[in-house]
Amino acid sequence: LVTAGGRGVLAGPAAQPVAVTPPDPVPVGMLAELTYRCPLQCFYCSNPVQTAGYRDELSPAQWLGVLDQAAALGVLQLHLSGGEPLLRRDLVDLVAHAGALGLYTNLITSGIPLAEGRMEALAEAGLSHVQLSVQDSDPASARHIAGLDAIERKRAAAARVRACGLPLTVNVVLHALNADRVLDIAAQAVALGASRLELAHTQFYGWGLRNRAALMPGAAQVERAAAQAVEVRRRWGDTLEIVYVQPDLHTRTPKPCMQGWGSRQLVVAPNGDVLPCLAAAQLPGMTVENVTTRSLADIWYRSTSFNRFRGTHWMPEPCQSCAMRDIDLGGCRCQAYQLTGDPAATDPVCSLSPDHDTIVDILAGTGPVPPLQPRRFP
Ligand code: SF4
Ligand code: FES
Image (tube, rainbow, N blue to C red):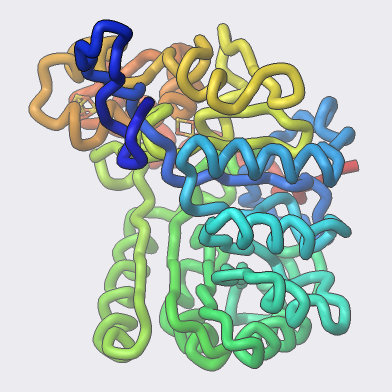
């Protein structure tokens, strides 16, 4: 028997107490990508470019079972994402089920489509928080980025979120097309009634990676955006929680991606694939597990994929003997693969990486800039 705290004592047959330590770590958050369908076509989308295999989505009953397993595994925070999760007809049922399981449930949405009464039903079902994406403060640019005119519908969605008494985060992905308007974008978030604003530079995966050359801000633009973020804090920092995520390629310092591989979070794709991060399916040598054939707990604790880069044993030099290895966890495995072909390499963002020149070349921007490709999910 294991105590509720997760560590306890098992009474053996000879009344000899046997210390039991359940396996670590326990996942705190689960990103449930309910569908890759989406009415928007954002150039920076991190969804996979290869869509084969994702059209058959888990059924409502299967998702309910996934939520049961996640709660039993120790997950506390559920992020409902996509694509556009509002396109799932069973969304209210999923939120209600998550609420009954005691999960904090965050809806990550474009706000489109939002049928009459839907937000109210989600709030009633126990939704905890809404994160609304905004593409830009400039209407023409926002239309260009999203592939449709969405600002008015986003305003209406934000108003309904607030009317339901739900906390609202406005999330803005920054890149070359909008990074000069950080101040205006923040003013827009304030007008929408946000209590939290995320200004996050693009992470280059999926469609974002495909469009990297055109989306990559230059060093001067990044400096201007950072200065505007300081001004945003000065103007609204007392009333608005503000998160500014730097463009890691410009920082020479890798991000601790997912707070460590198989450490704090897991991702479930629309077809039930269970992944340590949203881009891991592309990695060579990955055995992608699926929740329809293996339990979530078994995948989390025992699968080859989740154990592959867990901890620090896999790290090459210079990470292995680096003072930062338990802080940045060697950076991002997917970025390492995308830039070097080796998912176990030191993230080239790191100035100590033997492959750091690849970042220098990317930022120099001397290569061709292919036309932007809108995200599609045919
Ligand atoms: Fe991080 Fe590795 Fe670079 Fe050290 S060498 S700072 S652990 S990525
Ligand atoms: Fe896969 Fe960073 S996105 S490890």
